[in-house]
Length: 146
Image 1: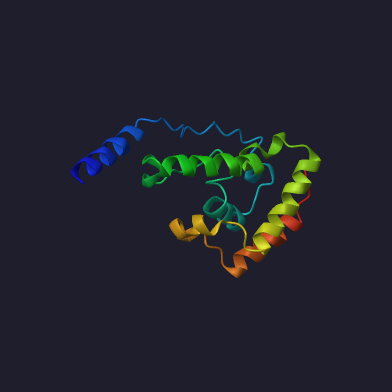
Image 2: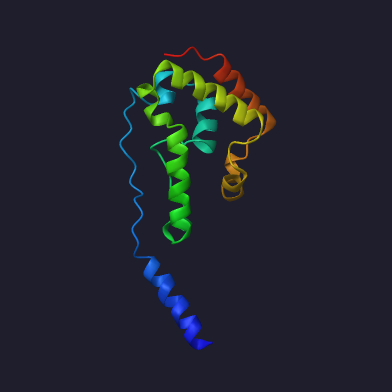
């Protein structure tokens, strides 16, 4: 039994040496969603609390994101989130991508698919109230794409 525990500990320590890139790319305000649309503070706050950690280049990694294998999962979720929508690079999207992203965002927020329940469990401030969800939906539905 001691050998098993020893080898589990060795493997756990060894996997900590596998690097995870946590560096955020610089944010160009000319491409950043909230800067392009001069987003009102209440909406900006909701987006920063509930969306920007997975859908921007402004990720704030929590302490547990530095422990493997959790760090690998978190980085994978962030990469996937950015692949679907990166609000820091909004200005680089064409009009069709923007339109689709807005429609999908409205639907995901309305259907309680976003933020992900697994994210909310560790980030309570991302747990949007019904009022906040309606505010986001209204804001996005009235947005004139630039």
